[in-house]
Length: 167
Length: 401
Image (cartoon, rainbow over the protein chains, first blue to last red):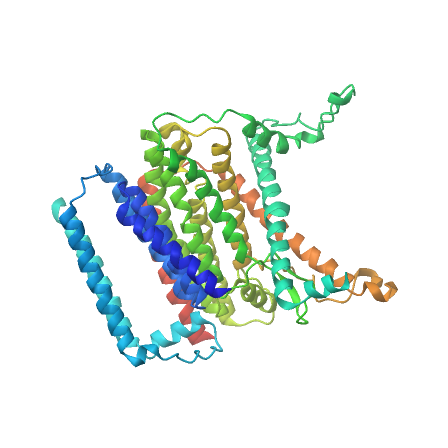
């Protein structure tokens, strides 16, 4: 059951991920990305990582992509015109991609570490929200605080940049 | 037959069919009737506030089958007549719209509020499942309850933004832009204002929050229950602040007056749904009222004890009023539990209805905010007050408790 769901959501994610690149209308691309994020969140749900999954929806699909859409609409971007296919470039792209995948497959197949079936993780006794919180505030407290300061600096930077013209 | 029943009571099939039953009950038994009732109530209450009579004619049309006069039923037939009118109108689609997004936008507005209802416990429990535990009256009892509510309701903005953009007309577009910036601004205040609730209860699970409130008193007034303590007095001051911020932000999230700038008639014709007619328009209507009901459900669950009421037991009770349980035959021992389970569901929807009335009352009383006032209120006042509130509640819990 969960394997079938995994394939369904992975396929959904990939199809809409391809849609982001292929569609000519910027709004369509943005909406495809939203669906792709929701698919990713579903994959997290399947792994019982409810907290990370829902944050995926809350932050990326619910806030970041709304801002993207907002900007696209404000800039009033028109759909790109379909360009003529540049055959050498296309061939080169496919060649590079095929080479990359070939190397990846070889590395994964050659290393016995990747082939071994890992034992299932132990079932947690607390819920995953609590687990994430405890880990963040004990084991990774310093990195967490540093990221917080970094975000504060970024926010102040944005305010300074946007106020510069007003003086 | 016995085999079918035995199969239905195995754990997995039992989970599936009870979940389906609950989903159908929430959708078709509770929310859709409640939406049309809310529309009717909106018209009646607005009429009362403006000193009019309001719809009072449409009732049972028995003159169609030969009687002299219709029965008016205080205009309750309007609940059915309004949807029928909307369904039967011509679905006019302007030429210049982006067809795909124009079609999909009303659906995107309506679905998120319905999904939000999945995690709200609307009753205590009914009967006993195969694992010996009572079946909880919540569709999905997940540990991330409140985060689910925020995440899914934040997706509701897509419908409005896309409707504004796909209409390819300037007033709907302005409505869509206003709506997206408004919803992003108020999501922050909405999320931060309820953090004190989680600090106190120590969980995000809505069912457990309701359980906490049954033991310790409703969160809006945590001193009501048990003995006196200073930290309860302090929380009794701080939690209403968080409640007020949450309530007002909920008004902004559901696009209700005084924050209905996305559809301000005087400035934007009709806002994002100007170009919609017939069922497309009806779906926006449905979405707005469903969001209002879901929002009321969340407020009731977080601050007003959910389905609980002092003196009313939950679905595991074995007694009935007036000692009636003693005269029950042995085959009906489940009856008290079912009775109180049913009462609990009604308590929940009574509380929700009270909040819907409040939403309507405010709409016809308070004038609309100006756009800069709206942004100032969200970013400068609510955001800061909610942050300070979190620190104060944490301090009270650490130092006074």
